[in-house]
Length: 198
Image (cartoon, rainbow, N blue to C red; front, side, top):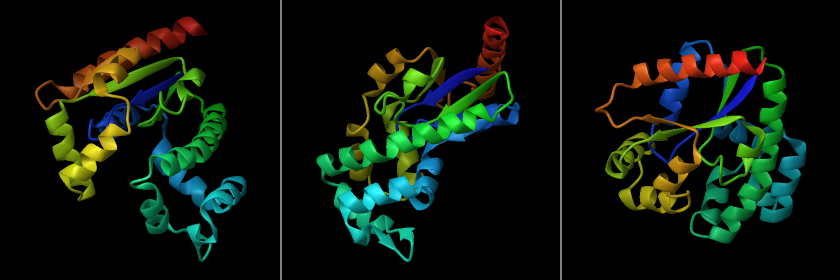
């Protein structure tokens, strides 16, 4: 079974692309959703978050998201610290999840595949690319946040041209190029690569 990452900058539409693969019957692990779940369920991770961010990090046994956000939003060191705790837990969880799947290949959808070092456990990485103005517009609409907040998040990710050069395959999601045919072509290619690996 091949382990494939799917990544892209904020607002690139990587979740949309991942959902199309899901419709084709490919299991998808959504790292962002998993990280949110683990911060509330993984005892070792909860202990580390409390150790580094204080007991106010949890309220009634649930992660106090607004408190954590207020700490890390404008503090790169604190954000890096949080990521250094959460990423290993998510990587462990995705590895466990992948072992349970029975498919020619599986997808791990994550914004920070290269930033977290999780590409090392993957066979290939798909990059989803979109022009910056479109990505900003999408993220503002989706998250109900300002342009400044979107651009601040963008600066925390590897720049898109660099990120795309690190990927093995690229899907263009610019609202000009048809998306589904690109996914189907790549799906067929990955099925072929999976057969060769067996």
